[in-house]
Length: 281
Image (cartoon, rainbow, N blue to C red; front, top):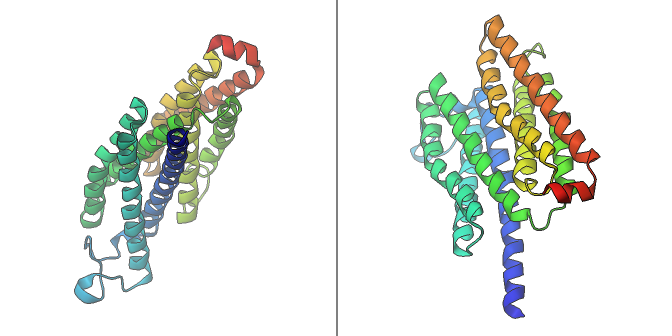
């Protein structure tokens, strides 16, 4: 009895750890976006990991460099959360795919640290591009691991609501995009990425967690939306710097496709009854 209770408490604690890791990674990415958008990433006079003031330049001396150092500190704490999640997944012998997803995030972590350093020293387009996509890979890894950890305590309704969130949030991605609002200010840019991460997390949660729960049509529609969404993000990032009419048309087409797939997946998931879902699963 005691062993069963200890195992239950261990699983519950790991769920909290995994959820906090997702939240910390989300916050770190948004801080990184804000740091870049405001130019604070260059405020430490191209020094890393030190900054521009105090003993041995260890401390910031201005508001922008202070903001940059906050981002570095939060990123460091988030890295510890990611490492802890993977370590506990292996030490407590959680499910295979939980361990693989958490480990994938850890493998990408040193790459992200190196790229973060290079954004301070170089701040070039290719470095920023890679830095962003590695961050998205880490975020996807911790989201998938957390989704799998929660599968045995989450109802089918949660996956349907996630699809609804993705469908509703997709137009907001467009609203906050540079092609809609006249000024792509730092707050607007941060909101844009916050909504984008929300759509990504909602789709991943619904697809991974609801694969054996949702109706087959809903999960395949959601999987198609999840597959197309990174293409939308990539085209959008290119379009921000100026793009041809063909590229903007392709971007708009992918936006519409993701929206249509997410809406269709949500509608199917809500319309199919419990008996049909059980049969499909």
